[in-house]
Amino acid sequence: MTKKLFIKTWGCQMNVYDSARMADVLAPLGYQPVDEPDGADMVILNTCHIREKAAEKVFSELGRLRILKDGKAAAAARGETDGQDGRMILAVAGCVAQAEGEEIVARAPFVDMVFGPQTYHTLPEMVAKASRAAGSVLNTDFPAESKFDFLPEEAASQGVSAFLAVQEGCDKFCTFCVVPYTRGAEFSRPAAQILAEARRLVAGGTREINLLGQNVNAWHGDGPDGGSWGLGRLVRELAEIDGLERIRYTTSHPRDMDDDLIRAHAEVPQLMPYLHLPVQAGSDRILAAMNRKHTADDYRRLVDRLRTAKPDLALSGDFIVGFPGESDADFAATLKLVTEVGYAQAYTFKYSPRPGTPAAVDGAQLSEEVKEARLAALQQLINAQQVAFNHGFIGRTVPVLFDRVGRRSGQLLGRSPWMQSVHAEANERLLGRIVTVRVDAALANSLAGTVATGEFSTSAIGPSSIGLAPTGPVTQTLEASA
Ligand code: 5AD
Ligand code: SF4
Image (cartoon, rainbow, N blue to C red; front, side, top):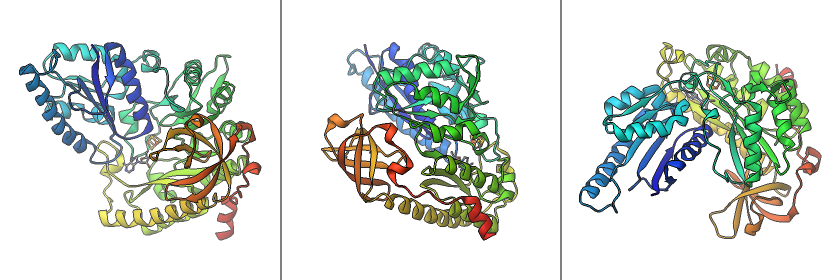
C-alpha cells in the first residue's frame, strides 16, 4: 500500500537535493511524495542551521505537526482511516537535527526520528526502528562510509535542470559558519560515480546540471584514467556527455579557484558564464577575523583573471554585514569592493552568532540597529547593480533554456546563461529546449521576452555573439583610485 510522504525543506540547494534523495531512499518502502502534511504517513522537516531562529522555526512547525499527528491517530482510533495504522512518523533531518538533536528529542519527545545529513542512506533501518520502538530514534553520526555509496539511484527524471551533489562538507572553518560542524569534513564523490549519475540524468531528460557542494570548487578526485582531477577536469568530462547543454557549479570558495577551472570558463561552451563566488566582506581586517585566508585584493585579482578568461562572466556573491568588530571603515571597504567588482546579483546577510562557532563568543558584537542599517545600504547598492545588469539586456537576444511552465497560461520560464529568470509566451513543446528570446523588459528579479527564433545551439554562445560589454579590470580600478 502506498504511504504518503511530506518533506518540508529549508535552506540551501544541498538540502533541496538531499530531500529528493531521501524520497528516493523511501520510495522502495512504499512512500510517495505528497504536497500537504495533513494525513501523511511520514513528515520530514529538512532543516537549516546557517542563520538564527532555525531551531525556533523547527519547534513551532513541530507544534503544528503534533496536532496533525494526534488528529490522525484519533481518526484511526475511530476507524476512519481506511485500515491504515493512523501513525504519522515525524522526523527532523538536516543541520538543526545534527547540531541540536538531543535538544529536539528532549523538548519534542513526540518526534520519532532525528537524524543528521550524513545518515540518509540508513533511513530504512531508522524507519524500521521507529516503527518498533517507542521514543525517538536519534542518529547524528558521521559514519565512516560515504552515504553516496549507499544511496539508491535517483528517480528517473529530475527535470530539465537538475542538481548533482559532487562535494559535501567543509574544512575551512570560517569563524562565523556552522557548516564544518553540521556537514562534517570535506568529501569529494568519486568522478566515476558523478559521471554515471550525470549520464542517467541526461538520459532522463536533464539538459542542465548544477554541480553542488558547500565548497564545490574544492572538489578533487581520482579520475577513471588514474589521474588526479580537479573540478575543471570534471567539467570538461561532463561536457562530453551528449545532450548535456549546460553546466553550472555552486558554491565556490575564492581560495579553491584554480587555473584549470578558470580556463574551463574560457574553453568549455557548456560551462555557463555565471559564478557564485562569495567574498563575505571587503575589509582585510574582517576577512582575517573571519578566517577566510585571503585578502580583498586577492579576490579582486581573481575576479580579473576570471573576466580575462570569460569577459561576460556574471558574478554573484554572499556578504555578511555586522560581523563582530566591523567598523564603519570596514563596512565602507565592503561597499567599495562591491562597487568595483560589480555583481549581477548577490545575497546579503546580517551576521548571526551561531552556537559553537568562534565569532559567536567574540566580545565585539554589534547592535541590531547597526546591522540593519548596513544591510539596507549594501542591499541598495547590490539592487542597483542587479537592475543595471538586467536593464543592459533589453533589446538583446539571449538563449533561454525553458525548464518550467509559467504561472500564466501559455507562458514558459527558463534561465539565461547568466542565471536570470526569463519568461515568454511559448509553446510547451519548447520545454527542455534552448530557445532564442528577445528581451523586452527587465523586471525586479526577472526578464520578460518574446521567442525570437527556433532553437539555439550552445556552441554559438560567446561574448561576441551576445555583445555584452566586458566589465573593466577590477585591479586597475583599484589602482587608479588608490
Ligand atoms: N551569519 C550570517 N550569515 C552567515 N552565513 C553563514 N553563516 C552565517 C552567519 N553566522 C552566510 C554566508 C554564507 C551563506 C551561505 O550564508 O554568507 O556564504
Ligand atoms: Fe562555511 Fe566558510 Fe566552509 Fe563556506 S567556506 S561552508 S562559509 S566554513
